Picture (cartoon, each protein chain N blue to C red):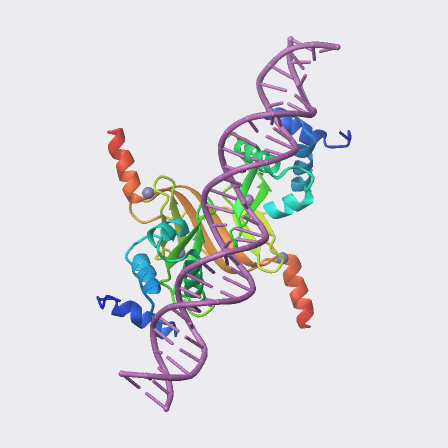
Length: 149
Length: 149
DNA sequence: ATCTAAATGTAATAATGTTGCATTTATATT
DNA sequence: AATATAAATGCAACATTATTACATTTAGAT
Ligand SMILES: [Mn+2]
Ligand SMILES: [Mn+2]
Ligand SMILES: [Zn+2]
Ligand SMILES: [Zn+2]
């Protein structure tokens, strides 16, 4: 168990009364190292030495604890992203925009832009909102512009 | 092929150069008879005499033709709803709110409320938006209110 | 009535997710 | 440092959702 600089993740696991295992630390460091969500298939192939079931269980506890949240992309594939809001045990507050790039398929959590509260039709009582957008992400829109020129 | 009052659906199939088959007409009449989306599992159990593969193929052409659109609910289950916008062959414009009731699990397409165009961070080029909300639908919020009193 | 492209059925396979149970391991306690 | 134990993992089996290839049937045209 390489004692690198994942003190941060060890603390995180501690805080949530989860044992510090290699698999969990690897999942955390992979997800925290990116600025996009990670798809279940990606996780599974990168962590191919970890048992599939274990991976599902890790993702599930992390989600329950409010460490990560699950997003389905345009194809219905499960993606996981770290929570930046004040999420906790069974209390998620990830009301932000999920941008799904149609080219690279990456899902971006765009936290900073606040949800526009709109008034629903009579009778509907919403307790959470999520906005989805699809199109080109900065990298891909730059590339496509370059191709045209 | 009971010559009932599904002239409407026969016309619709005609318009899209699709053959009028019993299976297609049944799928259309089921989906048009409801004001909520229909989940794939529901469709499959109701239409259990139709082969699963056929059902998938029907749903896929209908989606391609712009007759229906696919929505994933909070659990990642595929739901299908009729298009009310001017959708056509590979041109969907279903930019509306999808309300997923946490109690009855139904997905409502709330068409009338217009998407608030918001400005994304530098570089992101969105070409479509969808808003998701979850909470209680009118029926379920009425029921839960009744239970409390 | 005949013909044919389109639609359906069937079987096989893949991908994703869950459950039950045996084994191992992180950590608390002695 | 050894031990005890709940937590975590691995493994096998299974369930659900989805796709592909190919044989057969059928709607609609001639
Ligand atoms: Mn997110
Ligand atoms: Mn819709
Ligand atoms: Zn991209
Ligand atoms: Zn409801």
